[in-house]
Image 1 (cartoon, rainbow, N blue to C red):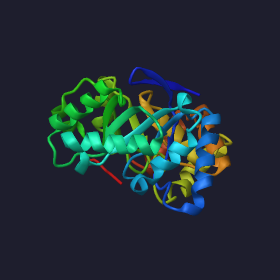
Image 2 (spheres, one colour):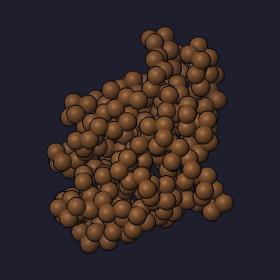
Image 3 (cartoon, one colour):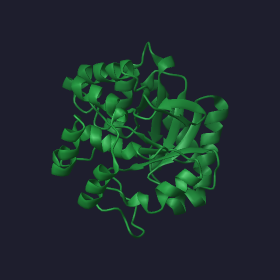
Image 4 (cartoon, rainbow, N blue to C red):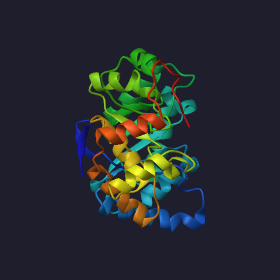
Length: 273
């Protein structure tokens, strides 16, 4: 699997998302099993957040990595309303307990909130000095937010990116590439399933003996600085995700996607879900 350097560590460019995991106790074992199978397939970056099922997803991740922590590059996120000097410390410690680990590899501010960025960064740096996190970054930040952050220590920015939501291509994506800051794409195969049933993506998928999800992932990964974090519980979907970086889209494929989902021609407000 293709890799990229993130926070000084080589990680796979396709990881595992966990949004909506931990919400249904009846799915708990299936979700744990899926994450472990994903690790077996080489998707060793796992992304979660205290927001997901109000800690439930972190508990699922903790169970999945219990005896495999050394294999995993672990990412979690703090709520904006917990992003004060004291709140970050307390929230991180709660996440560590749920995850069953002493250290989070990468800790992100989930989106910008009421507290000054300088206060949050100071709290992140304190956690790093304590060894409770190794690196920190942000999520759902636009260029102005990153410029105000003005922190070379910021390891990544995690944002919405897929063919249906490509506004970041106008400015944010090239800016991060110029700064050598990897971009982590959440919902890379869309939300709600419409993208997976798109006729254009299906034609391209048929051409490559692939699936529409693999085409969407390959499309995001055409940019060398992008990491994708799709969520999957089904074993076959996990296998497909893991092999998506072997799909090579040609100029005609990309032109078809551009025709169906036009690239931005002006600055757009940053999309979030």
